[in-house]
Length: 153
Image (cartoon, rainbow, N blue to C red; front, side):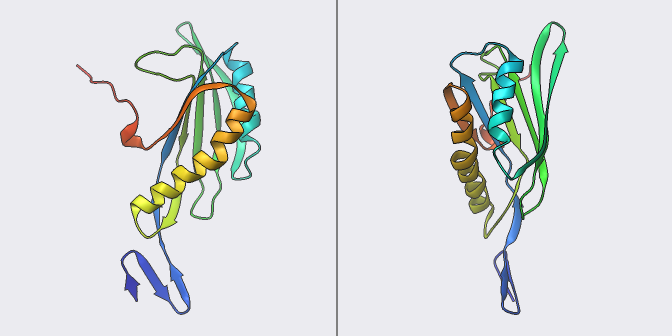
């Protein structure tokens, strides 16, 4: 028997699984270099049992340097990708030192509830760990439609 996005099978109620990606952006109070700051972020994220196979790499292109952290999110609603970038410069177009993309599924009755679950998870689990390892000026958790999209001309 179906109830909205729920399915009742025998004695079990199965909720729908929604893709509920979120982003975390943060500006640090002080950033020495991307490798040192990246290692602090990696140390914070390594405390999360849901984040697996984390690795940090340094990148350089056209005189710019940044660090990336790669891995996966292992949750019961489905394992998805995880990617973070740590850079030194903050600009109007990229107003952050840290950008993390959480490709994540969540089980809920509606997409809005799924998004709220993921946002709450990032705010309650990830944000405090990052703040404990590196001083941040600002930190925000955003849905994809809330991320700054420059107008292309």
